[in-house]
Image (cartoon, rainbow, N blue to C red; front, side, top):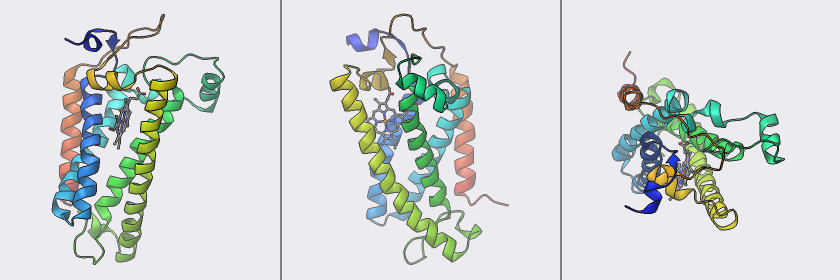
Length: 220
Ligand code: HEM
């Protein structure tokens, strides 16, 4: 077994890693299906993305310690204290990295919500909740759906640059823990508590049910 798998404490549990690498796989697929006008597959993949984003948001409340927003998201004061070196970050995302996590998840959420109400250029294909909005609102959603996608691409590029920066200049390998889940912690850092698998499964069921319900046009 490679050393990286054995070394260190558990940091990123399987739900965080499964969701993360699914994001990575889905982004090019969503782009490709939109480019090639395969809107029915695009809509199905979009609903999978919606389910994953919702599951990650729920996991940020009830999940393992490093995944919890309350643990890594700091207000301006906490952020400044960290930047001035007055406060050490706990294992996982530091307060600055937390901003990028929030931005990525926030934009992904905005993107899938816009997809629910949008329509394609000729107004023939539409998202499952398009019936709730007027033609003009759906047009605005269509433009925003494209804009937010481009913002996501920019943020992902920044995300990859930050990971490379940490690797090259801070000698901190962020990639291996996101693959294998474990990381050697700084001295004095407590090993984070992990949430039980049943809680992840409960989040998955709720997120999948919500995505299915919205995909069916939120029957009323
Ligand atoms: C090949 C492409 C990618 C690589 C190598 C990569 C790698 C990583 C790594 C190493 C982390 C952990 C950072 C840390 O320890 O602070 C991370 C976190 C994260 N990445 Fe990526 N990433 C990629 C693409 C993406 C994409 C496409 C998205 C979303 C569209 C994304 C969203 C996130 C989010 C939301 C987190 C926070 C993890 C969490 O707490 O759930 N990443 N990524």
